Image (tube, rainbow, N blue to C red):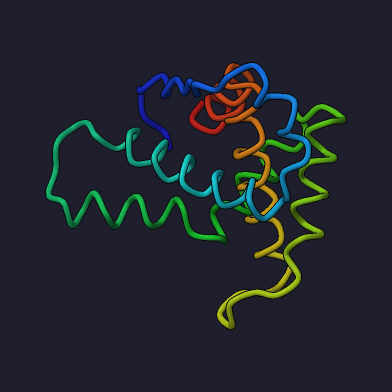
Length: 137
């Protein structure tokens, strides 16, 4: 995503009591949330300049496919904290089956990225934005 957009700032509104339970969420749930957050992030990055919806859609789909997500995780790995690396491991271990078109390793890496994004979206949006900005720099 090599464009001049500085990134999107995510903020989630939760009550203080809810933050205590985030670590109890399954990797599958975190990946489910992370998938939605990542797609919204990518869609927002491609808003400008205006273009045909079909072109816009093709660019977004190219960025959110599992193979591209796996590469994004590899790009982020040197910047991850120990806690974030643990979240990535949990996501990888939770992905035990995958679509036929993918190798299991690629699917696990993509799921790991989504798990990390979901976790950070709920736990630390500032850190999420730092890492997402790394992907567009």
